[in-house]
Structure formats: C-alpha cells, structure tokens
Image (cartoon, rainbow, N blue to C red):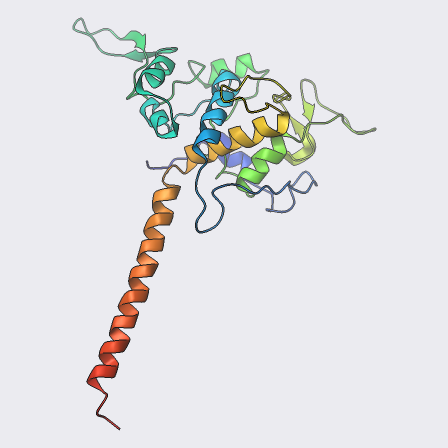
Length: 252
C-alpha cells in the first residue's frame, strides 16, 4: 500500500521535536514495540485490539483515508466483520443512470470514510480545530509511535501560572503544551473480547500499534525481503571468494 501523501495537518504536527525531547519540553516515553529490530513483527492480537480502540474512540473525529476497509482483514477481522464496519457509514457515489450522485453504504473497496462531510464541518464540530487524518500519524512526527503514545498519555492539569486558551487542554508533550483535543484515553474505556485488561496504558499501546500498522502495513514484508537479500549477498560473496581461490590457487 502506497503511503506518499501526508495531509497538511499531519505535516504541521510533524515539525519541531526530537526523538528524545518533544518541543513542549517533556521527554518522550520510549516504549518497546513488538516490531522494533531486524526480527520485529506486529502482534496481530494487539493490532485487532488497537483497531477496536480506533473504531470506538478515535474514528468519531479522525479519519484514516489511506486505509481501505478490505485491509482490515490483514489484522484479523473476517470479511463479514470488515463489510459490517464499512457499511456503518455512507459515502457519495455516482452518477447513476439519471446522472445524479447518490449516497450508499461503504463497501470493502472504499477507503475509510471520514466522520465528517468536509474539513469545514469537522472544524465546526471541534471548536474550530481540524482533527488530522491518522493514516500517517506515527510517521508524521519525529519520535513516531513513542510521540503518539506520549501525547495520548501526556494530558495533565496545567501548572500554576500557565494560561490555557479557550477550549484548549494542557498536554506535556504537544508543542506549546496546548491542544484542542480533550483527553481521550481512560481505564476500561472499551471491553476487549480477548479478556485483556483495558488499562489506559494498554489502550494507548494498542491503538498506537494499530496506527503504526496503518502507516506501515508492509513492514513485515520489507523486513523479510531485506533479511533474504542479506543472506543471498553473503552466500554470493562466499561463492565468489571460493571461485577466486580456485582460479588463483596456482599463482604464487
């Protein structure tokens, strides 16, 4: 799946931080992600839990426009489950035989349908702030998934003397420490079908894992191909070395 388009909102959030220190002045909370390292891979059970958090919580405001509903089968949803999710929202299609556009339920081939008809409608519903599309969010910020994790866990009461703007919330990690999004994660916010305890920390790790998959679904294939390529090059090098020894063995 190609990931060549970054929304302007996501790009704006991508500026001004380092992996260890966010521009808000707080250190990012480094996590041990299952996909880290040469042999790392996604935890499919975690991806499915993370999708549940995205679906139940995040998708009320945020889009995922670079992911098609059919791609949800890659994280463990059945075809019927993916079809049911797609049909929850309508999208405009057409023209029909009369030349008119019409609304229809989403289907597997559709990209994830936005919760809002357009950006202006999204701003009106969110006190003037435009919720960014989350398709590339773990790639759109220096620090990647650690930044997103730290942001979601970084809400706190504003320190004494800090002036918050109207409708803004204090966040230790977000640049400027003011963010329009209210805290979204809390203990037992969802009930996991696999029995995993839904602590705020677990919910955040799960949804960040899902968002990283959304941004980089080809990660496991890329790592596998890279490993195979390195093994091939090592074998080829050994063969060439043996051939060189064979050809030049009588030369002193």
